[in-house]
Image (cartoon, rainbow, N blue to C red; front, side, top):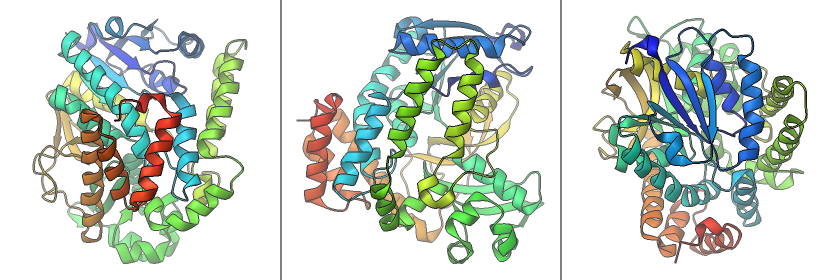
Amino acid sequence: MTMAEGRRLTILGGGGFRVPLVYGQLLGPDSPISSVILYDVSATRLAAISRVLTAQAAAVEHPPEISVTTDLSEALTGADFVFSAIRVHGLAGRVIDERVALAEGVLGQETVGAGGIAYGLRTLPVAEAIARRIALVAPGAWVINFTNPAGLVTEAMAAHLGDRVIGICDSPSALGRRVMRALGVSSARLSYAGLNHLGWLSAVRVDGEDLLPRLLASGEALSSFEEGRLFGAERLRALGAVPNEYLHYYYETPSLVRAEQGAAETRGEFLLRQQDECYAALARTADPLATWTATLRQRDATYMALEGLGERDDAEGGGYEAVALALMLAIATGTPTDLILNVRNRGTLDVLDDAAVVEVPCRVDGSGAHPYPGASIPEHGVGLVKRIKGVERGVLEAASTGSRAVAARSMACHPLVDSVPIARRLIAEYQRLLPELGYLR
């Protein structure tokens, strides 16, 4: 198939709020996609988001064709790319993840700690079923996974799809852009390594020189970007690296638990309320794109507000949707590009086995994503990465065997839980509130 003929993209979770971000990226002249199939379990959400996409395409000549379906096999058949962004039990599930954890005095973030484990346990059986269906009806498709917990889900899907599933996250790329901007450089070779939502930027090389020490020495430069303000100059200098913003949950756990317990609503409750209002408005408004855009701006402005950032004054474009487009474009055209992705380790990080999915810089071309050799995790982060990968492996085992005992063990082993009695109560309460966890015995 030539570029001129275009490719078919299937979006799983096609009624999701952020789908217009992905479709917006496909409206540019470089997009390799000629048709988009939206799949979702909710026909109502599909109809609402389709109205936004139609409005987006109105001023564009020859936009990608849009179709919708609630039939998974129909959605996948003939796909060249599959973008997976599903949320099992919806945002209501995220609220349960958060509130059950906070009631036990532990962090309730959706991908980190107890909430992330509950999210993974109910998502993995669905993700694996989807992977098996893709292998059956679209074996040549490239799967781009954004379903959280992204590294864990990608590792589960890779058991069925091999290297044709690649996980993406916008956090590492955004971190790299902000650091380069603080340094006043437009391009650099970034040394970044870890797991999804658990990585560190340890070098920024331009013409062979590492500029990160220069950044760490400048209080003014550190205060100019999000992670510099979040972690503070003293901590960053002690680490000798710039962590992914999600490390804040590990470095400042007690204060964040107190902040979340004292907040009027959790992040999930805010998003659930906001999106329910947005979808209701999308069904009746004469200007669906303006309604959706206003909701998106409010959502972005309040991201990580409880974590001490307040409104993001350095919010920028080029999030996960830009990573997805760059990935698809490199594979479709064979034109190499560098991206930080979630892929199988294959010896890239010597502290983890080859099958472990890690988040590292990769060269992407027509044959897929290839990790650059020589990546390394800062010494202070090795133990944490190994422990979290062990937790992930336990969650994978629990999901495949249906073992409640293994699920509880994995929960207890997470450093943000670190208690067998609490872990058992968490699993029991999540099972009571989430029917998708009924398979655990």
